[in-house]
Length: 117
Image (cartoon, rainbow, N blue to C red; front, side, top):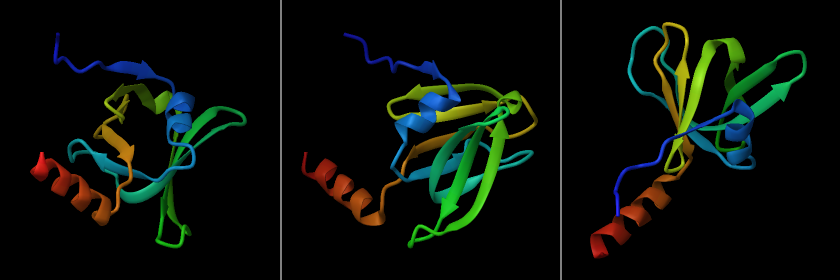
């Protein structure tokens, strides 16, 4: 049995569907060019004239506090591994990781459960 982590390539639409109705964390893999950090946000996919991926930052009351939009021309690929999605850009910009948002309470509970195991 192998412990290798499976990495698969997905589309913008597939990634948006995976997080539909969920909050996400967004963090840059490195810090050069443009770096993006969002503690709590949502992902939206729009395909009006051209496919676009929106990262929307939200506050504790779900109000929009900012957003970043990417069209398909600046995204080289999107890879998924163990529920974390990495957007690899074709421009001078740090790749970003996107994962499901977890509150401090949820993170503490997971940590405590791992300590008991």
